[in-house]
Length: 354
Image 1 (spheres, rainbow, N blue to C red):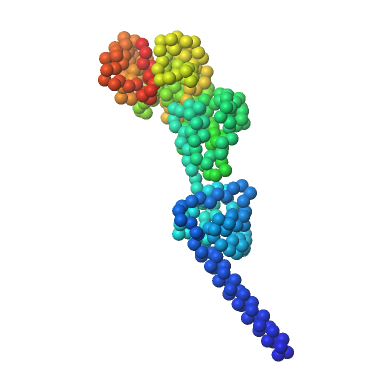
Image 2: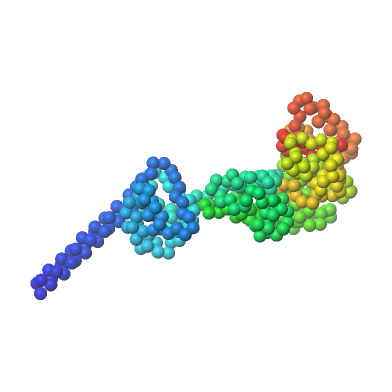
């Protein structure tokens, strides 16, 4: 009996020692500082497990005793889901700090900004430059085929994506951002369409999108959007051609090199609003909410013409004689004073011609 009692005591003491030893080893593993000298990111890719992530960090000598840390995760966080993404890791952090990041799914979010008035081509170029955004749409895919690639039908992509700043995380792609931007454009367009004025010479939300894109490209001063929209709406009502340079430029495509001449204005293309009646067949850029709202709620008035002053604002005229006088003053007489049209220094402002 004595021997049995001694054996039991020995086992209890041994278990106690092992438990204390295990606790100390685990505490040491959890409190060890990460061996890094500069801020970096930890990539957790699809299919990763806590064990694999921790083992890879041990292989890189960032931490040690990864097996102990993995068992702690299984014991204390059995239901935690390891979220895919980049985790910001900085000097001074220890293993417990890292586990807290992983448990919260505190992944690094990057952003890409798609600007109002940009074309779809510019949108794609910006997405291609976005850091660590997966590129799934080949550069040589024609724009007309992109919508099909995205599962969004066979419409022309121009104007279909809402300009905004989009957040993304590791593992997301250009496709993901474009689908979100398209969904957002449809939401905004539907919201503004419901609040449109009565009696507009616009029959569909898509026509509103086309007109909004022209307003976006014409506008250098945001508060003039409504007034510029009013000019275009009155022209459409009276059967006047829009005669707007941005549509001509868009129709020229890669041939445009910063200037348009008389020959360009006489060239018959689907987008040359000096030659065609009504709206062009598609938008010419990505309009923002304010341009869409202006297209659907234009300012009242009687002006039918406008010319850029050169400072981003415009002079609006009711008659052709008034307009021609404004053109002479702001584009001819002031040309020697570094006159510039709006919105872009490299482009002549539309609506400026008599």
